[in-house]
Amino acid sequence: MKCPRCVQRIHRAAGGCPHCGFTLADADALFGAEDVKLRTLTDAAGLMRREEQRRVESAMHRFNRLFPQLFVAVHTGAFKGVSNLRQFGFWLLNRAVFEDLPVDRLNEAGVLIAIDADAKAAGMSFGYALDAFLEEEDTFLCLSRAHAYWLEGRHADGLVKAIEQLTIILKKRSRQVRRDPERFERKVTRPPQVDALVQKIRGGRKVEKEEAPKDREVSP
Image (cartoon, rainbow, N blue to C red):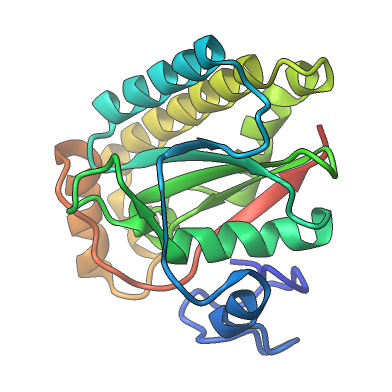
């Protein structure tokens, strides 16, 4: 994973960044130390009409039907510039309480798309349960699929494209897991937990807590 502040690569089990010392406490100092109640689609910036929000929600529901143990969340707002957008995604996946999700759907199994309306930037963060299954290049590809739509102010269309691309990637990873499970076991700290996660990718059981999420940004 990469540090949300200095973007240096760090070990996924690290409690803080060895390069700059960044921890969740630093993100709390920026955004608040209390849990935040919100819905998986929170358009705080008002970028989408209700009809557009329904289209995004439909894409999110389609994703959930395919991967019932995972979820996608979307948050739009003003996050004080691109330099803090990575940190915001990291923080929200640790602090959010999503009111429209089952209580056993843990944030570690979430993918967050954040759009900064003021900076005209977007980022995608994912929880540590997906660490063995997604790379930053994957999230960058998802955001790239949405880029042209966001340039035109078509935020809903871009979000739908990003979620569809994420679905394609995870379907591909699921097939790769079945063919070569040892490859994915090597990506995590404790192999037995990956065996369980492979079953969850197929079967929909909850994900155990591990460490911090990562993200990637693109300017719309």
